[in-house]
Length: 467
Image (cartoon, rainbow, N blue to C red; front, side, top):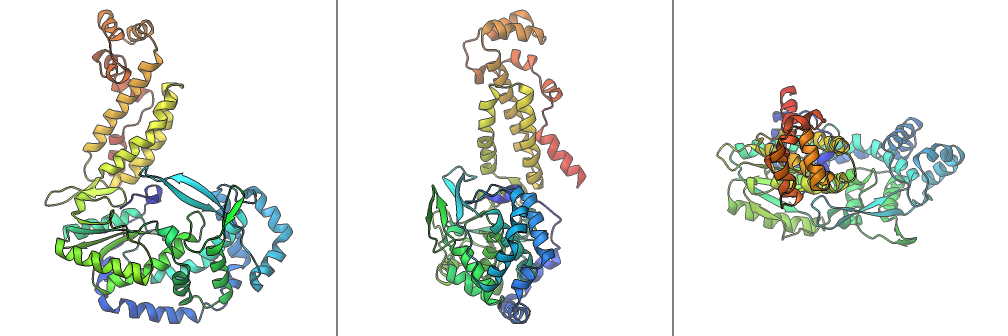
Protein backbone atom coordinates (compact mmCIF):
# COMPACT_ATOMS: atom_id res chain seq x y z
CA UNK A 1 0.00 0.00 0.00
CA UNK A 2 1.02 3.53 -0.59
CA UNK A 3 1.06 6.27 1.98
CA UNK A 4 -0.17 8.61 -0.77
CA UNK A 5 -1.93 11.86 -0.45
CA UNK A 6 -3.42 10.97 2.88
CA UNK A 7 -0.38 12.05 4.97
CA UNK A 8 -1.34 15.66 4.91
CA UNK A 9 -5.14 15.41 5.19
CA UNK A 10 -7.11 16.63 8.21
CA UNK A 11 -7.61 14.13 11.06
CA UNK A 12 -10.83 14.08 13.09
CA UNK A 13 -12.54 11.98 15.78
CA UNK A 14 -12.81 8.23 15.39
CA UNK A 15 -15.95 6.68 13.95
CA UNK A 16 -18.07 4.92 16.60
CA UNK A 17 -17.40 1.20 16.93
CA UNK A 18 -21.06 0.41 16.63
CA UNK A 19 -21.35 2.29 13.36
CA UNK A 20 -18.40 0.45 11.88
CA UNK A 21 -19.66 -2.91 13.07
CA UNK A 22 -22.93 -2.26 11.31
CA UNK A 23 -21.18 -2.26 7.94
CA UNK A 24 -20.11 -5.88 8.40
CA UNK A 25 -23.36 -7.06 9.97
CA UNK A 26 -25.42 -6.11 6.91
CA UNK A 27 -23.83 -9.01 5.08
CA UNK A 28 -25.77 -10.08 1.99
CA UNK A 29 -28.28 -7.25 2.27
CA UNK A 30 -25.70 -4.58 1.41
CA UNK A 31 -26.29 -4.50 -2.34
CA UNK A 32 -30.09 -4.65 -1.93
CA UNK A 33 -30.05 -1.67 0.42
CA UNK A 34 -27.88 0.22 -2.05
CA UNK A 35 -30.30 -0.49 -4.90
CA UNK A 36 -33.27 0.77 -2.90
CA UNK A 37 -31.42 3.94 -1.99
CA UNK A 38 -30.53 4.45 -5.67
CA UNK A 39 -34.19 4.20 -6.69
CA UNK A 40 -35.37 6.61 -4.01
CA UNK A 41 -32.61 9.08 -4.80
CA UNK A 42 -33.45 8.98 -8.50
CA UNK A 43 -36.81 10.65 -7.93
CA UNK A 44 -35.02 13.69 -6.53
CA UNK A 45 -32.13 13.95 -8.99
CA UNK A 46 -33.84 14.85 -12.27
CA UNK A 47 -33.20 18.61 -11.97
CA UNK A 48 -29.77 18.73 -10.36
CA UNK A 49 -28.29 21.19 -12.88
CA UNK A 50 -30.52 23.92 -11.47
CA UNK A 51 -29.26 23.08 -7.99
CA UNK A 52 -25.66 23.12 -9.19
CA UNK A 53 -26.19 26.56 -10.73
CA UNK A 54 -28.06 28.00 -7.74
CA UNK A 55 -26.41 31.28 -6.74
CA UNK A 56 -25.70 30.26 -3.14
CA UNK A 57 -24.10 26.99 -4.26
CA UNK A 58 -21.94 28.76 -6.84
CA UNK A 59 -20.79 31.38 -4.34
CA UNK A 60 -19.76 28.64 -1.91
CA UNK A 61 -17.88 26.89 -4.73
CA UNK A 62 -16.15 30.14 -5.67
CA UNK A 63 -15.08 30.73 -2.06
CA UNK A 64 -13.65 27.21 -1.87
CA UNK A 65 -11.67 27.63 -5.09
CA UNK A 66 -10.40 31.01 -3.95
CA UNK A 67 -9.38 29.60 -0.56
CA UNK A 68 -7.54 26.69 -2.16
CA UNK A 69 -5.86 29.00 -4.67
CA UNK A 70 -3.74 26.71 -6.86
CA UNK A 71 -2.11 27.17 -10.24
CA UNK A 72 -3.77 28.57 -13.33
CA UNK A 73 -5.04 26.19 -16.00
CA UNK A 74 -4.36 26.20 -19.74
CA UNK A 75 -5.99 29.62 -20.21
CA UNK A 76 -3.67 31.29 -17.69
CA UNK A 77 -6.57 32.73 -15.67
CA UNK A 78 -5.74 33.15 -11.98
CA UNK A 79 -8.10 32.84 -9.03
CA UNK A 80 -8.06 36.63 -8.63
CA UNK A 81 -9.29 37.05 -12.22
CA UNK A 82 -12.17 34.56 -11.89
CA UNK A 83 -14.82 36.83 -10.34
CA UNK A 84 -14.42 39.70 -12.85
CA UNK A 85 -14.58 37.15 -15.67
CA UNK A 86 -17.77 35.60 -14.28
CA UNK A 87 -19.42 39.00 -13.88
CA UNK A 88 -18.82 39.67 -17.56
CA UNK A 89 -19.63 36.22 -19.01
CA UNK A 90 -21.70 34.21 -16.52
CA UNK A 91 -25.10 34.57 -18.24
CA UNK A 92 -23.65 33.01 -21.40
CA UNK A 93 -21.81 30.27 -19.45
CA UNK A 94 -24.94 29.41 -17.46
CA UNK A 95 -27.04 29.13 -20.60
CA UNK A 96 -24.50 26.79 -22.20
CA UNK A 97 -24.38 24.65 -19.06
CA UNK A 98 -28.18 24.32 -19.07
CA UNK A 99 -28.57 23.54 -22.78
CA UNK A 100 -25.64 21.09 -22.86
CA UNK A 101 -23.39 23.07 -25.20
CA UNK A 102 -20.72 23.95 -22.61
CA UNK A 103 -17.30 22.50 -23.48
CA UNK A 104 -14.77 22.24 -20.62
CA UNK A 105 -11.24 23.40 -21.33
CA UNK A 106 -8.44 20.83 -21.51
CA UNK A 107 -6.59 20.23 -18.26
CA UNK A 108 -2.95 21.23 -17.88
CA UNK A 109 -0.61 18.28 -17.45
CA UNK A 110 1.70 18.54 -14.45
CA UNK A 111 4.10 15.83 -13.27
CA UNK A 112 4.92 15.61 -9.56
CA UNK A 113 7.20 13.08 -7.79
CA UNK A 114 5.42 10.14 -6.17
CA UNK A 115 5.69 10.02 -2.35
CA UNK A 116 7.77 6.83 -2.56
CA UNK A 117 10.21 8.49 -4.95
CA UNK A 118 9.54 5.92 -7.69
CA UNK A 119 8.58 7.88 -10.78
CA UNK A 120 6.06 10.67 -11.12
CA UNK A 121 2.32 11.13 -10.75
CA UNK A 122 0.32 12.94 -13.42
CA UNK A 123 -2.00 15.73 -12.33
CA UNK A 124 -4.55 17.38 -14.58
CA UNK A 125 -5.08 21.00 -13.52
CA UNK A 126 -8.44 22.39 -14.74
CA UNK A 127 -8.95 26.09 -15.41
CA UNK A 128 -10.19 28.07 -12.41
CA UNK A 129 -13.62 28.38 -14.07
CA UNK A 130 -13.89 24.61 -14.49
CA UNK A 131 -12.65 24.12 -10.94
CA UNK A 132 -15.50 26.29 -9.69
CA UNK A 133 -18.08 24.39 -11.75
CA UNK A 134 -16.68 21.02 -10.63
CA UNK A 135 -16.73 22.19 -7.02
CA UNK A 136 -20.38 23.24 -7.42
CA UNK A 137 -21.21 19.76 -8.76
CA UNK A 138 -19.26 18.18 -5.90
CA UNK A 139 -21.26 20.15 -3.32
CA UNK A 140 -24.55 18.94 -4.77
CA UNK A 141 -23.61 15.28 -5.27
CA UNK A 142 -21.79 14.70 -1.97
CA UNK A 143 -24.92 14.92 0.26
CA UNK A 144 -26.64 12.49 -2.13
CA UNK A 145 -23.88 9.89 -2.34
CA UNK A 146 -22.00 10.11 0.93
CA UNK A 147 -24.78 8.62 3.15
CA UNK A 148 -24.82 5.55 0.88
CA UNK A 149 -21.07 4.90 1.10
CA UNK A 150 -19.62 2.16 3.28
CA UNK A 151 -18.70 2.73 6.90
CA UNK A 152 -15.33 1.21 5.99
CA UNK A 153 -14.57 3.88 3.38
CA UNK A 154 -12.53 6.77 4.77
CA UNK A 155 -10.90 8.71 1.94
CA UNK A 156 -12.13 12.07 0.61
CA UNK A 157 -15.26 12.05 2.72
CA UNK A 158 -16.53 14.75 5.10
CA UNK A 159 -15.87 13.96 8.75
CA UNK A 160 -13.71 10.93 7.97
CA UNK A 161 -9.94 10.53 8.00
CA UNK A 162 -6.91 8.32 7.62
CA UNK A 163 -6.67 8.10 11.42
CA UNK A 164 -10.12 6.51 11.58
CA UNK A 165 -9.03 3.94 9.01
CA UNK A 166 -5.96 3.07 11.11
CA UNK A 167 -8.13 2.74 14.25
CA UNK A 168 -10.44 0.34 12.47
CA UNK A 169 -7.51 -1.69 11.09
CA UNK A 170 -6.07 -1.93 14.61
CA UNK A 171 -9.37 -3.26 15.94
CA UNK A 172 -9.52 -5.95 13.28
CA UNK A 173 -5.96 -7.09 14.07
CA UNK A 174 -6.78 -7.17 17.80
CA UNK A 175 -9.83 -9.34 17.04
CA UNK A 176 -7.58 -11.97 15.48
CA UNK A 177 -7.86 -10.98 11.82
CA UNK A 178 -4.08 -10.82 11.58
CA UNK A 179 -3.58 -11.62 7.90
CA UNK A 180 -3.82 -8.71 5.51
CA UNK A 181 -4.87 -8.83 1.87
CA UNK A 182 -3.15 -5.77 0.45
CA UNK A 183 -4.54 -4.93 -3.00
CA UNK A 184 -2.62 -2.43 -5.10
CA UNK A 185 -4.66 -0.90 -7.92
CA UNK A 186 -2.26 -0.07 -10.72
CA UNK A 187 -2.48 3.62 -11.71
CA UNK A 188 -6.08 3.73 -10.54
CA UNK A 189 -6.88 7.35 -11.44
CA UNK A 190 -5.40 6.86 -14.93
CA UNK A 191 -7.33 3.64 -15.62
CA UNK A 192 -10.91 4.47 -14.60
CA UNK A 193 -13.19 3.22 -17.36
CA UNK A 194 -15.52 6.05 -18.38
CA UNK A 195 -18.44 3.83 -19.42
CA UNK A 196 -18.33 1.82 -16.20
CA UNK A 197 -18.15 4.98 -14.09
CA UNK A 198 -20.96 6.75 -15.96
CA UNK A 199 -23.22 3.70 -15.61
CA UNK A 200 -22.70 3.83 -11.81
CA UNK A 201 -23.43 7.55 -11.71
CA UNK A 202 -26.58 7.09 -13.81
CA UNK A 203 -28.02 4.73 -11.20
CA UNK A 204 -28.57 7.75 -8.94
CA UNK A 205 -28.24 10.88 -11.08
CA UNK A 206 -31.22 11.16 -13.44
CA UNK A 207 -30.45 14.63 -14.78
CA UNK A 208 -29.03 13.83 -18.23
CA UNK A 209 -27.56 17.33 -18.54
CA UNK A 210 -25.42 16.79 -15.47
CA UNK A 211 -24.37 13.31 -16.62
CA UNK A 212 -23.35 14.76 -19.99
CA UNK A 213 -21.33 17.50 -18.30
CA UNK A 214 -19.51 15.01 -16.06
CA UNK A 215 -18.66 12.85 -19.08
CA UNK A 216 -17.30 15.92 -20.83
CA UNK A 217 -15.06 16.59 -17.84
CA UNK A 218 -13.85 12.99 -17.94
CA UNK A 219 -13.07 13.26 -21.64
CA UNK A 220 -11.56 16.76 -21.58
CA UNK A 221 -8.16 16.55 -23.23
CA UNK A 222 -4.84 17.00 -21.46
CA UNK A 223 -2.55 19.76 -22.70
CA UNK A 224 1.23 19.56 -22.58
CA UNK A 225 3.53 21.91 -24.42
CA UNK A 226 0.62 23.44 -26.34
CA UNK A 227 -0.56 20.07 -27.67
CA UNK A 228 -3.87 18.59 -26.45
CA UNK A 229 -4.15 14.80 -26.21
CA UNK A 230 -7.63 13.20 -26.10
CA UNK A 231 -8.55 11.12 -23.06
CA UNK A 232 -10.53 7.89 -23.33
CA UNK A 233 -10.03 6.62 -19.77
CA UNK A 234 -8.99 7.88 -16.36
CA UNK A 235 -9.92 10.78 -14.14
CA UNK A 236 -6.67 12.70 -13.51
CA UNK A 237 -6.11 13.99 -10.00
CA UNK A 238 -6.21 17.74 -9.67
CA UNK A 239 -9.89 18.63 -10.03
CA UNK A 240 -12.48 18.85 -7.21
CA UNK A 241 -14.72 16.20 -8.79
CA UNK A 242 -12.13 13.42 -9.12
CA UNK A 243 -12.15 12.19 -5.47
CA UNK A 244 -15.93 11.90 -5.32
CA UNK A 245 -16.39 10.02 -8.58
CA UNK A 246 -13.56 7.65 -7.66
CA UNK A 247 -15.47 6.83 -4.47
CA UNK A 248 -18.63 6.28 -6.51
CA UNK A 249 -16.82 3.68 -8.61
CA UNK A 250 -15.04 1.94 -5.74
CA UNK A 251 -18.21 1.88 -3.63
CA UNK A 252 -19.17 -1.14 -5.71
CA UNK A 253 -16.06 -2.89 -4.37
CA UNK A 254 -17.07 -1.90 -0.83
CA UNK A 255 -20.56 -3.34 -1.29
CA UNK A 256 -19.09 -6.56 -2.65
CA UNK A 257 -16.81 -6.89 0.36
CA UNK A 258 -19.71 -6.18 2.73
CA UNK A 259 -21.91 -8.77 1.02
CA UNK A 260 -19.18 -11.35 1.67
CA UNK A 261 -18.91 -10.30 5.32
CA UNK A 262 -15.28 -9.19 5.08
CA UNK A 263 -13.49 -6.85 7.47
CA UNK A 264 -11.79 -4.17 5.40
CA UNK A 265 -10.58 -0.57 5.27
CA UNK A 266 -10.47 1.58 2.15
CA UNK A 267 -8.94 5.00 1.81
CA UNK A 268 -9.39 6.16 -1.81
CA UNK A 269 -7.68 3.41 -3.86
CA UNK A 270 -5.79 1.93 -0.88
CA UNK A 271 -7.67 -1.25 0.06
CA UNK A 272 -6.82 -3.75 2.81
CA UNK A 273 -8.90 -6.75 3.84
CA UNK A 274 -8.30 -8.55 7.14
CA UNK A 275 -8.73 -12.34 7.44
CA UNK A 276 -7.72 -15.07 9.90
CA UNK A 277 -5.44 -17.23 7.77
CA UNK A 278 -3.06 -17.08 4.85
CA UNK A 279 -5.17 -19.57 2.89
CA UNK A 280 -8.27 -17.38 3.31
CA UNK A 281 -6.24 -14.37 2.25
CA UNK A 282 -5.12 -16.05 -0.96
CA UNK A 283 -8.71 -17.00 -1.81
CA UNK A 284 -9.85 -13.43 -1.22
CA UNK A 285 -6.99 -12.05 -3.33
CA UNK A 286 -7.89 -14.32 -6.23
CA UNK A 287 -11.64 -13.63 -6.23
CA UNK A 288 -11.32 -9.87 -5.71
CA UNK A 289 -8.74 -9.58 -8.47
CA UNK A 290 -11.24 -11.16 -10.85
CA UNK A 291 -14.02 -8.86 -9.57
CA UNK A 292 -11.94 -5.70 -10.00
CA UNK A 293 -10.63 -6.57 -13.43
CA UNK A 294 -13.84 -7.97 -14.93
CA UNK A 295 -16.58 -5.96 -13.21
CA UNK A 296 -14.86 -2.59 -12.76
CA UNK A 297 -12.22 -3.01 -15.49
CA UNK A 298 -9.41 -1.94 -13.20
CA UNK A 299 -5.89 -3.36 -13.15
CA UNK A 300 -4.49 -5.06 -10.05
CA UNK A 301 -0.72 -4.78 -9.69
CA UNK A 302 0.13 -8.36 -8.78
CA UNK A 303 3.76 -7.56 -7.98
CA UNK A 304 2.87 -4.99 -5.32
CA UNK A 305 -0.24 -6.75 -4.00
CA UNK A 306 0.32 -9.36 -1.29
CA UNK A 307 -1.14 -11.54 1.41
CA UNK A 308 0.98 -10.94 4.51
CA UNK A 309 0.99 -10.10 8.19
CA UNK A 310 -0.10 -6.51 8.96
CA UNK A 311 3.30 -5.75 10.52
CA UNK A 312 4.96 -6.66 7.21
CA UNK A 313 2.93 -4.11 5.22
CA UNK A 314 2.33 -0.37 5.22
CA UNK A 315 -1.15 1.15 5.27
CA UNK A 316 -1.45 4.94 5.01
CA UNK A 317 2.09 5.32 6.32
CA UNK A 318 1.50 3.17 9.40
CA UNK A 319 2.24 -0.44 10.28
CA UNK A 320 2.01 -2.64 13.39
CA UNK A 321 4.41 -4.24 15.82
CA UNK A 322 4.81 -7.99 15.47
CA UNK A 323 3.91 -8.85 19.07
CA UNK A 324 0.81 -10.66 20.36
CA UNK A 325 -0.98 -7.43 21.27
CA UNK A 326 0.00 -5.56 18.13
CA UNK A 327 0.53 -1.83 18.48
CA UNK A 328 0.35 0.86 15.81
CA UNK A 329 3.75 2.13 14.69
CA UNK A 330 5.26 4.38 12.04
CA UNK A 331 6.36 2.25 9.09
CA UNK A 332 10.00 2.11 8.06
CA UNK A 333 8.89 3.27 4.62
CA UNK A 334 7.48 6.49 6.11
CA UNK A 335 10.75 7.20 7.93
CA UNK A 336 12.66 6.77 4.65
CA UNK A 337 10.26 9.16 2.91
CA UNK A 338 10.80 11.79 5.60
CA UNK A 339 14.58 11.54 5.23
CA UNK A 340 14.24 11.86 1.47
CA UNK A 341 11.97 14.89 1.89
CA UNK A 342 14.56 16.56 4.12
CA UNK A 343 17.46 15.92 1.76
CA UNK A 344 17.03 19.17 -0.25
CA UNK A 345 16.83 21.08 3.05
CA UNK A 346 20.25 19.83 4.13
CA UNK A 347 21.78 20.84 0.80
CA UNK A 348 20.17 24.28 0.93
CA UNK A 349 21.33 24.63 4.54
CA UNK A 350 24.95 24.88 3.44
CA UNK A 351 24.25 28.35 2.07
CA UNK A 352 22.09 29.77 4.85
CA UNK A 353 22.23 30.20 8.60
CA UNK A 354 21.57 27.28 10.89
CA UNK A 355 18.61 29.17 12.38
CA UNK A 356 16.99 29.49 8.92
CA UNK A 357 17.39 25.77 8.32
CA UNK A 358 15.86 25.03 11.73
CA UNK A 359 12.84 27.27 11.03
CA UNK A 360 12.05 25.42 7.82
CA UNK A 361 12.76 22.08 9.47
CA UNK A 362 10.30 22.82 12.28
CA UNK A 363 7.47 23.35 9.79
CA UNK A 364 8.04 19.88 8.37
CA UNK A 365 8.50 18.24 11.78
CA UNK A 366 5.25 19.55 13.27
CA UNK A 367 3.16 18.48 10.28
CA UNK A 368 4.79 15.05 10.11
CA UNK A 369 4.33 14.30 13.81
CA UNK A 370 0.75 15.59 13.68
CA UNK A 371 -0.09 12.94 11.11
CA UNK A 372 1.83 10.14 12.86
CA UNK A 373 0.63 10.95 16.36
CA UNK A 374 -1.39 7.70 16.40
CA UNK A 375 1.80 5.67 16.71
CA UNK A 376 1.93 3.72 19.98
CA UNK A 377 5.71 3.32 19.94
CA UNK A 378 8.20 6.18 19.92
CA UNK A 379 11.61 4.59 19.42
CA UNK A 380 11.88 5.71 15.79
CA UNK A 381 11.23 9.32 16.89
CA UNK A 382 14.22 9.18 19.24
CA UNK A 383 16.38 7.87 16.41
CA UNK A 384 15.11 10.57 14.05
CA UNK A 385 15.82 13.31 16.60
CA UNK A 386 19.40 12.06 16.91
CA UNK A 387 19.77 11.85 13.13
CA UNK A 388 18.43 15.42 12.64
CA UNK A 389 20.83 16.86 15.24
CA UNK A 390 23.67 15.01 13.53
CA UNK A 391 22.67 16.62 10.22
CA UNK A 392 22.57 20.09 11.75
CA UNK A 393 26.04 19.66 13.29
CA UNK A 394 27.26 18.50 9.91
CA UNK A 395 25.93 21.72 8.33
CA UNK A 396 27.61 23.81 11.03
CA UNK A 397 30.88 21.99 10.40
CA UNK A 398 30.64 22.86 6.70
CA UNK A 399 29.88 26.49 7.60
CA UNK A 400 33.15 26.65 9.51
CA UNK A 401 34.97 25.84 6.23
CA UNK A 402 38.59 25.32 7.36
CA UNK A 403 40.54 24.09 10.44
CA UNK A 404 41.44 27.59 11.66
CA UNK A 405 37.82 28.80 11.65
CA UNK A 406 36.61 25.51 13.16
CA UNK A 407 39.08 25.74 16.02
CA UNK A 408 38.24 29.39 16.69
CA UNK A 409 34.47 28.72 16.74
CA UNK A 410 34.79 25.68 18.97
CA UNK A 411 36.93 27.66 21.39
CA UNK A 412 34.26 30.41 21.48
CA UNK A 413 31.66 27.75 22.26
CA UNK A 414 33.56 26.48 25.29
CA UNK A 415 35.69 23.62 23.93
CA UNK A 416 39.15 23.33 25.51
CA UNK A 417 42.01 24.30 23.21
CA UNK A 418 43.73 20.96 22.73
CA UNK A 419 40.40 19.16 22.19
CA UNK A 420 39.29 21.81 19.68
CA UNK A 421 42.61 21.57 17.84
CA UNK A 422 42.45 17.79 17.61
CA UNK A 423 38.94 17.95 16.15
CA UNK A 424 39.61 20.90 13.82
CA UNK A 425 42.59 19.20 12.17
CA UNK A 426 41.15 15.68 12.20
CA UNK A 427 41.31 13.78 8.93
CA UNK A 428 37.55 13.26 8.70
CA UNK A 429 34.74 14.32 6.42
CA UNK A 430 31.85 16.50 7.65
CA UNK A 431 29.56 13.57 8.50
CA UNK A 432 32.16 11.76 10.59
CA UNK A 433 33.58 14.96 12.09
CA UNK A 434 30.13 16.00 13.33
CA UNK A 435 30.11 12.94 15.61
CA UNK A 436 33.26 14.05 17.45
CA UNK A 437 33.00 14.88 21.16
CA UNK A 438 34.33 18.41 20.53
CA UNK A 439 31.50 19.18 18.07
CA UNK A 440 28.88 17.83 20.50
CA UNK A 441 30.41 19.98 23.25
CA UNK A 442 30.31 23.07 20.99
CA UNK A 443 26.77 22.37 19.77
CA UNK A 444 25.00 20.38 22.50
CA UNK A 445 21.35 19.40 22.25
CA UNK A 446 20.43 22.23 24.59
CA UNK A 447 21.97 24.83 22.27
CA UNK A 448 20.12 23.47 19.23
CA UNK A 449 16.91 23.69 21.28
CA UNK A 450 17.72 27.31 22.18
CA UNK A 451 18.13 27.99 18.46
CA UNK A 452 14.51 26.85 18.06
CA UNK A 453 14.87 23.19 17.05
CA UNK A 454 11.72 21.24 17.91
CA UNK A 455 12.06 17.61 18.89
CA UNK A 456 9.91 15.01 17.14
CA UNK A 457 9.66 13.08 20.40
CA UNK A 458 8.60 16.18 22.37
CA UNK A 459 6.01 17.09 19.73
CA UNK A 460 4.67 13.53 19.79
CA UNK A 461 4.34 13.63 23.59
CA UNK A 462 2.66 17.03 23.37
CA UNK A 463 0.03 15.63 20.99
CA UNK A 464 -0.39 12.56 23.20
CA UNK A 465 -0.98 14.66 26.33
CA UNK A 466 -3.60 16.80 24.56
CA UNK A 467 -5.76 13.86 23.49
